[in-house]
Amino acid sequence: MIPLLETFKALIRERCGLTFDGVGEEPLVLALERRLAATGLEAGGYLTRLGHDESEFAELVSLLTINETYFFREPEHISLFTQTLLPRLLAQRGGTPVRVLSAGCSTGEEPYSLAMALLETHGEAARHLVSITGADIDRVALARAREGRYGTFSFRTLEAHRRARFFSPEGRIAPEVAAMVHFTTLNLLAPPEPEETEGYDIIFCRNVFIYFETPTRRTILTYLRQRLRTPGFLLVGLSETLANDLGVLPLVQEDGLFYFEMRSPVPATASTPLASPPRMPAPALPSPLLARSAPSFFPPAPKTPLEPGRPSLAPPLPSSPRDPVREARRLIQDKNPAQARAVLAPALRVAPEGDTSLRLLDAFALLHLRETDAAERAAARVLESNPWSIEASLILGFAARARGNTPDAVRWFKQAVYARHNCWVAQYYLGEAHRAAGADELARRAYRLALVHLDAHPDPDGGLGLPLGLPVREVRFLCERHAALAEKR
Image (cartoon, rainbow, N blue to C red; front, side):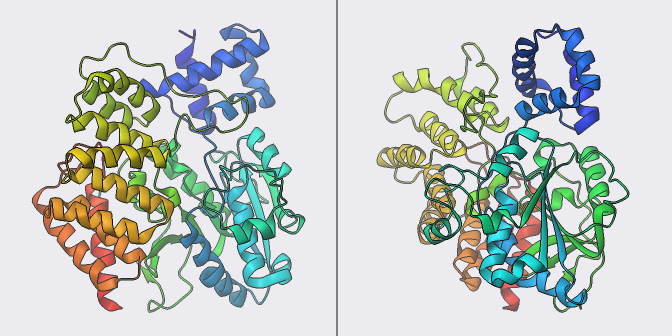
């Protein structure tokens, strides 16, 4: 046990908002052990050093954040930016360059994606139309961003033509893209300096809020608001929007997407401000399973290879759990899928072929670890012994969705509905798949059925054997919104 652990936790929470409680404190323990060994200090001396040595604090923070990102993540937002928000701002500002901030940019994939999209839509003029800043608290990640060299993990959803155009064969970013992005350090919990106030027209802060509790998120949103010009736009992750509707900025819906706005600059017919957004209690962030785009389907995976030499941040395994199914469910819910698989492994070795509960949880854990091929094989094996397993069909649908294979996603979610027509989870994801395919009427019907069954059985897991943990109120809201939009088309 690390001495003064609670004091370390309090210091880190105060300075950058990261919390490490319960099962989640083990990443902090591992990071502290590594830095104590590197510096040769005892806990007390290291705590003192953290109080005045910014570079050492940055080294510690770089071990505590999961730099899980890739190019063109959540492409709907990028299209909204290039096709709608940017032209609107350029027209309003009379051609004055638009300033964009990518907050929590990690190793740079997001701001570089924005730059690539701008070069595709505006050509060389993009360099004069937009200024892009990537910012993060992790200086190690920023150094990698400035280097601009990437591997296959960052390219996993990038089309071949974009990779050929914007990267060298060795994976280095093209000079024309690099020239459009400037990187700087940013602590989201620090109030903006005077020169930062009202400095940006558009802020992307996507898939960052998973680290923070509600009071901290409200503080971060307040500081981001202070950095926005009027009018200005804030885009958070597709699955994070409602959880961050905390009254700091008005929430706006446009073309089926949500964003926050300093002041609505367009008529209500073009975008619909949610003047009276539902005052539901904001959930602790909604499950990433709600995300619309396939790449953002999964939560951060502790075992994902982040960079050479980076340690796994997964906590140690519990010893000999009495009920591996219950323990694996808990670990998956706590975002520790690698541990869940380790817990399941001994039981799987002796389980009869017909015992599907263990195999389904193992497949679900593989899915969270982004081992999509293995997850599909495990789910298909379940279907061999139980062709009507709704959980196996859902897992195969999630895997197809993650690959961006909409037709297969529709097929598997349909099979899940056939297996249990009154399962709101299956109906909801079938609606999502139909909407992705542009089948508005089929999507509307699925959303309506999801609402009926959700009202009858409002279980976050949908009565299934998978620890989905979906935020019921947000699902209901999304079904109502998307069904209403589909009717208007």
